[in-house]
Length: 144
Image 1 (cartoon, helix red, strand yellow):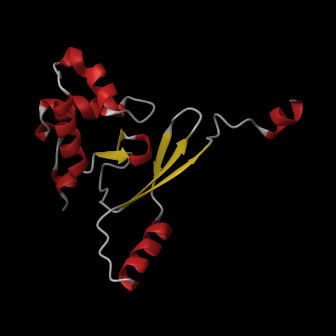
Image 2: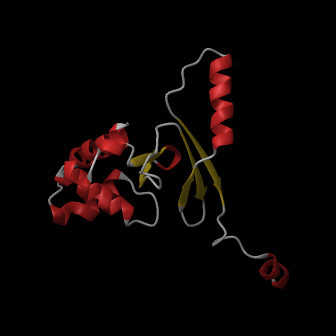
């Protein structure tokens, strides 16, 4: 059983709980400084407090770092989520990041790793584009 699945909300520190709750309620990925601004009224005063909480939440599998945005999101699959491949579809218009799992991509990466004697511990794929909310519909494009 992984540490994330053994972990209950009661085992998180106050700062970890505050950071996780803030991320869970945000529409888009948030930087550590955005989180700090959001949580100052709750007692977080220094960036290091946020970064320490984020590091532990990532270790527990409850938060992911979106590398290309230098931001963080609450894991969309915290129950039973193993540390393997994480895939994000990131909208360049509104900033929304959708997390999803893709067993086919993960199998291909693990196969490549095995064939090339490379031990993959984690992987993330970040796709950038335009989400359905920001992409004009074909009917709207014809009207323009």
